[in-house]
Length: 205
Image 1: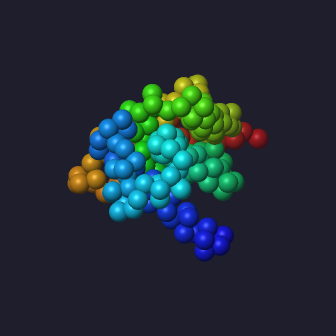
Image 2: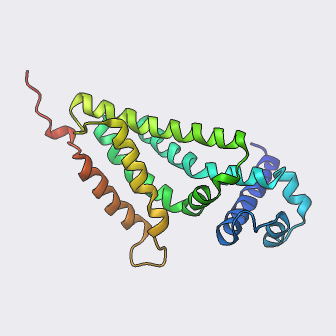
Image 3: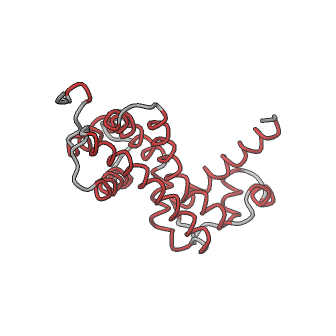
């Protein structure tokens, strides 16, 4: 990556961050590109150069939460551990990713109706891929006896729903730091799934 590429990426990142704050505070409909430019202290052409439209900004913001979650499940799987350990690694990282992207996720939930049809299809595919990735880990864990779960698909949706909901109740000014919330939330999720640690498995010869 060249210096020019790094500068361009930084500009896009700053623009997305400003738009995320404004869409979260004022709503998508009530936010203009002039508002985004003013928040950044730049001109509107700066915004257009990095994003062709407000719809494009919304699409990237809505996708960012699930993309962050997908990155965490991919990273956990890439470690090459068993399903139980993969899940134990993934869940706390997933919780922290949701905390980090909680405003984008809230925007996604509130403003999905404003996505262009093609962007809505893309977002649906990203969600499907993520849930399928979690489901696959659960299914492999069920099949080898590391995870006690009856329906991997329903359980995958339950994990995603439970963790995603902290978007609405997590308070960064509250008594618990993000890492503590991740630890406690992970314990709840893993206990519900009754994860069996690999070293406790008894395999008959």
